[in-house]
Image (cartoon, rainbow, N blue to C red; front, side):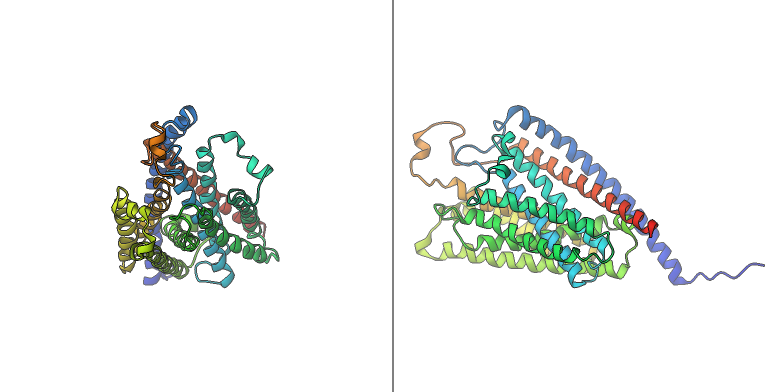
Length: 408
């Protein structure tokens, strides 16, 4: 005797949705693997070139010593701080889509996946790579470099401890450490701004708004990259760390979108306040601002940062179709690379000592900078490393979570 089928339209719809998610997840997995392989292969060429040829293949020199790699370093630091803060604060406050320990772990893994490549790229930027350890063994804490290096390493330890404690049920140490991590994740993006503000002899950098600009950009970057990860890698993440209520997932993506929009607008307001003072105050004319807005770097500011990195993402985020949101998040992240370059380069290409460039003649003694192919390739390798760390971290999180569930 057979029993009548109890299949309902909602059950059929749920199975169809899961099937569509599996197809979409498989498609994204193939695309991401292809992108990662291309980035790794091309990036390895740049790393080999850097290790064999030194800095001779880079576009920076003695007068402009910081370029694309420093911009990518500050970008990685911003993503790390913003993603940890948003993930930890969402967990502590019980925000929908962020209150599960699985979501907290994904935020921590993303933070570490951004921070470690930032360390790697700043290591390659050093003239004496073998002396990197001295910033920890022989620090001078009145130096922003030493202070930041120690703070990053302490944050790294705190983040790893939070990741480990997230597997323990009702750990009494998790929330206090998350609060400490939140404080540090807000401090080190701000300290990145102070790093420039402390240069009193450089009028372009010596502004109290820089630390606020770096903080606002860190929140925008963290939310944008978390949104990108949850929308693209979301189905694979759910298979790895346990099922997630679709409503929770939808709420988290919507919340991250709101945070990204708000932080991006706050950044633009601060940036307008910073630049408008130089433009409208006849007593504070800034050649560096002229260089950024109307000189050779105008496409970096107007096109890549303002239009593609801000206006277009805000338009895409305003669309009801969620398929446009990951693209908007990606453009926000790429736009902040241009923003970092807009802070770095104008502050370096305007000579502080009149006549210095004419006093000594050499190809590397010029007040100009254009990133070379080697610098771009190394940046691609850093992105590939970050993607690999995130993938391994998520797989490890899933394996540990499943093992603990089986023991329970």
